[in-house]
Length: 138
Image 1: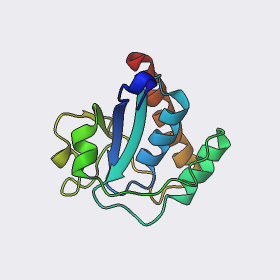
Image 2: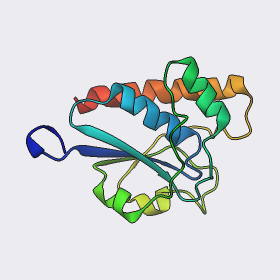
Image 3: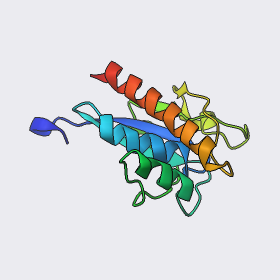
């Protein structure tokens, strides 16, 4: 709940594994979130861990996502989200866009199995997009 019992609005960041892109987006949104907004993330086939390189590159910019967990995308998350962002899909059969309904697609490359330099580039793209998005929500 927000101030005076008013429910917070929710943004959902979704990707297949909920191990990299959506976790970084969740971390950045927590940093930049305008008042009255909360963030959740999920995946259609979540891993049992958050990508260690995603954790490392986020620490480089002062954001700790090491305690975040990969989560299954749920009907409740989809239903209660005021804004849904699909991070991008390389595998169309497992893509969250198939279940999200009304969503924004960012088309960001998956950091899975990429060298740290590429993961940093992806992190910076996510940072820019989340910061820009937060300014529109204020």
